[in-house]
Length: 611
Image 1 (cartoon, rainbow, N blue to C red):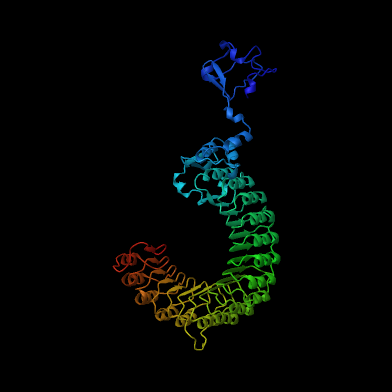
Image 2 (tube, helix red, strand yellow; image 1 turned 120 degrees about the vertical axis):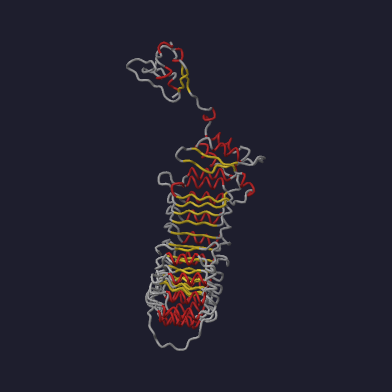
């Protein structure tokens, strides 16, 4: 635009001398209409760079510093005395911000800033303004890297990452960064992640979820600069391959936790590098990575240090060989989750249990693995001597025989959860309770359709005096007869959750309430539509002194009489749900007038649909 002033082409504004020496009489109505004289056949070229003042107009000139090339600005920026000055420069323009974010932390000239610093922490995408806020509240963090930033959805852009990189450097250093999703038009790329790497060497935790535009180049920069990285979480990042993860393994020896999910280009080679170069690794999660196979798992466990304690393997193309390696080398593993391993057979689980290497395993969760059978379950019970928590989900080949055999072998078992194990029946549940009488504290059954309410002649069973929590949810076949038998075996219950058991009646629940000697604390009966006031009256009379939570949501036969009994007897109750019950204003009034009720916070009463 400044070239227009001295332009001498055929269509110039005025061909006789400079435009500034033009006779003022040739300018028409300059103050209000900004009209400019020109030959009739030519159009005016007046635009933003010209400012009109009276009868003359001047050119608006750019600041002289803008004519400097990026190389010169880079040298200036890296010599700024402190974070406050860098933050102020970052507010000038996006160009300056991106240049500042490209300065590596190691390239900054170390000059003490006596006044502390301020930080860039927000970029307004609509107006392209970069706001600054005071960073005094974070000065005590020094450079420990305790600051946390999370970008989600449309807020996840390279500009924001650059602002974070520049701003947090003077406010204690960025320690944790999470990027979840990306902006559809200006999403996060390797450029933004590189800015974080350059300005945040204190980064310890990095989480990337659903960021397809970030690839190996971004992780390479993180590996070069962020040697303190301890936790890496990469999910749905199809552009990241073995190359990026291997760089992390080679440059970040402090890595303790690694999560890789739905990354189609990550395979065995990177896991070998992790096992070889990350001696502090304690937790690893691998899910839906088609290139991960037995070779990667075997290398990870055989070469890893003995402090790998938490392992989660889900939807991987591994076979029995991998489970055998885990059973032999997993001497430090305390928490093991196996899910969707379709290529693992009964032999794999059997060998894992009999290898005797999982001596420290305390929690085991198996979901949708066809290799989990009665024989393999018994072997795991015998081989994992310190197992305390067991969860089986959608294990369709486990029957009563295998479950009871497991309960007998697992002498340390404290918690058992069965979900959608449809071959488990009433006999198996009673057998578990009878054979885990000294250690089992919690039993949970969810959607086990094989349980039928059969009034069978059962042999004399030992009571389970250790059980404190019983949860039976959404098992339609579990009725009053089964509940009465369970109640006789569990006299020390504190927590009961029977939500969704629409088949139980007062006749089944009353024996359980009467057999609970220790006093119930939390009771959830939501959806038990056949229960009446008789149950609540008995509960208030027998357990009113200990009851703290009562959920009667959907118990439509419960009336005002129950609320009167609760008001008179339940002095510790602080959470009551009577939604969907047949109560009236009289019941609510009686409840509100109860002198024994604990009406202090966090008292909660839910009456939705109840009146």
